[in-house]
Image (cartoon, rainbow, N blue to C red; front, side, top):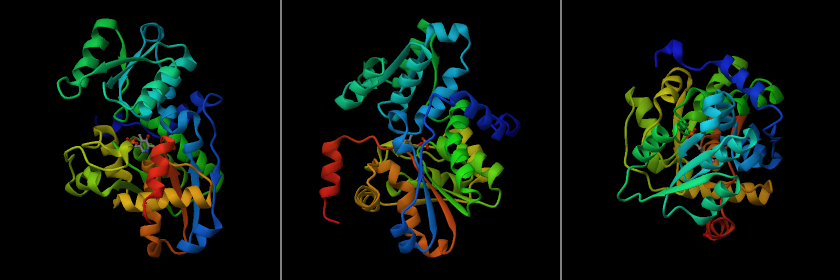
Length: 324
Ligand SMILES: *Cc1c(COP(=O)(O)O)cnc(C)c1O
């Protein structure tokens, strides 16, 4: 993509109009206790309270709402065992489009059930022997399906940007914004919204320490690929940022920080006990970074995107039970 092909704030606005009435306008919450701890005013955009439990429905719905008649009839396909699968399955159901989701045979049963519960047709593959992208492309070609990837797609990025658009409409200009990063779709979309609505706002991405492909890429000035990282932040277990997100991130993002799994657990505990919010580990990246960098944020107005809340209860409890 050349710079003139990258999605813009106009695409975020168009996405906002498409998803209105189909996707929740999630609440913005604050905690006076946290504000006292960090010495700043922090505003949380709660996408853990979004339909299907994460911001992914925004990009999925936006992408599918743009299908032409032939694409709608044939259907959509994606590969994911996480929130993108559920986002595509739900958006497809809302729009009456058939959805095929390619998942590893050993995907967690709850995720398979959630995707099927939204009406998605799950196709399994053996992740030790088969290449999921190849399976996807083959199915797409044979059945005329349209592939929607989880982050490297302009409509997915524009849809993701609607969350920060809503946040800034509610809070007014912010000094800093912290966005969890996997492939960078949420970060890039957020940057498009923030550049337009709060031009002075510093935008930061946040990755798990073990999976700092985005940070390495930003510092190197080109996309760096790493091994699949070992982290509890399963929504950020990617090997490299997407090409389209990275082009926007390079242009608009101030820096990318990292946090440890222990810091993520601390933030999960904070959300649960102080704010009564159930947040998945990946959804805690933003808060963990705010707490780490609080000395630099003194007196500022800070936005945090809580990206999602999907975690099964047993895992949630066992993570919180680990000694602090
Ligand atoms: C997908 C996801 C992310 C990462 O989003 P990218 O667009 O891939 O950077 C972060 N948190 C949650 C909960 C997610 O589902």
